[in-house]
Amino acid sequence: MTQPISVQLKELLRLSAPVIASRTGIMLMSVVDVIFLGHTDAVQVAFMAIGGMPIGTIIVATIGLMVGTMVEVSYASGAGEERECGRIWRRSLPYALVVGIAGAILCLFGEPFLLWTGQEKHIAAGAARMLAVLGFCLPGTALFLTTTFFLEAIKRPVPGMLTIILANFLNAALNWVFVFGHLGAEPMGAVGSALATAITRVAMAAGLIAYVLTMADRARWGVRGPVSDYWRGGAKARAMGYATGVSYGLEAAAFGSMSLFAGWLGALPLAAWGIVLNAMSLTFMTAVGLGVGTAVRVGHARGRGALREMATAGWLGLGATVAAMGAVSLLFYFFPREIAAIYTDDPALLALTAGMFVMAAWVMTVDGGQGVMLSAVRGTSDAWIPTAMHFTAYFGVMIPLAWILAFPAGLGAKGLFLAIFFASIVAVSLLSWRFRQRCR
Image (cartoon, rainbow, N blue to C red; front, side, top):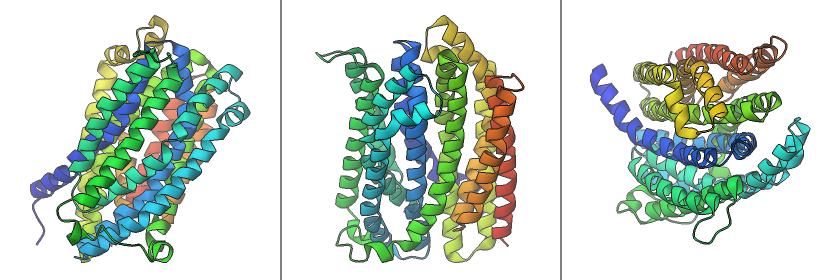
């Protein structure tokens, strides 16, 4: 029997709220980094903004590569195979470690990459130093992500949330030490902020894995024991992760290209763009959390073979996301200067950033909508078709349109935001159509 919508909404919010808190907490670390740097000088913010492009793409792709853990655990849990859930998680750990190490190696080539994309030499050099330090946290980040996905899929998201809350205190304290040079440390600017983040993320992974291995009902979920079928047994989860990683990576790379365009506009527009993108990413975590809750509910319904429940779970997630992100859009539109002042007290940077927040207000609702519909489609175990849809929206529409509007049309940063807006409309339309097909 189908539950009333009010009951389903309560279940969605129960699943999503801790995820929103934990994902917001992850992004809050980045916000703290930018705020500390914003009170040094705009060049340090520019280092973070352009260096965040490649590291952000790698981390987002890593999230996608690990999401197969959540999908497979959700399916196994919905089917009542609880010990299989732990086996799926254990198989994911060595894979996560390999993915993280590969990402760390890529981070060592930041300077030649940034120079190749046309960034100013001193900006590329400063960003590359920060990027190399951040790379050390990637193995820990991948381990933390796959463990978080496991816990969220068994409807236990609170431990991840608490880990993030504690991590933010640690990250803020380390930023205070390394960015400004307190307690005998040398002031290190963007590199110091990266070091604070790297230490914090490794600690997060260690703490959450320790929790899973020692939780009271660990035997019920089968989290301990050898992994004898790591490669073959993890094939389905990896296959889902490959498609999702490509999809997420493409979207992140597309948005990274926008940062490159902002860099071509100059150091000050790049710093302002970095601040606004940071705030957008923070508030987008509401859509990410609702997307995770939606994907889990869709996955559980799929495990029971309940197509009607799958459809209801997906559309309810979309409606809740539109409402939440619409509220964020209003804040950006009516209080841009107040939000910008949190990040910087530089008059020129403050004025430019406030103007960009107004433009960002138009983007948030449709971008959140496409994010939750991607999660809903993933919850049905659909792999490559939504990836192709993302490629079409963000590489086929957003990047060429952004270049045309920003440069030949002379709209500058405004053109970048308009391109994101139109591409997100394309993405949410295509993904909604695909989800409807999967629920038939």
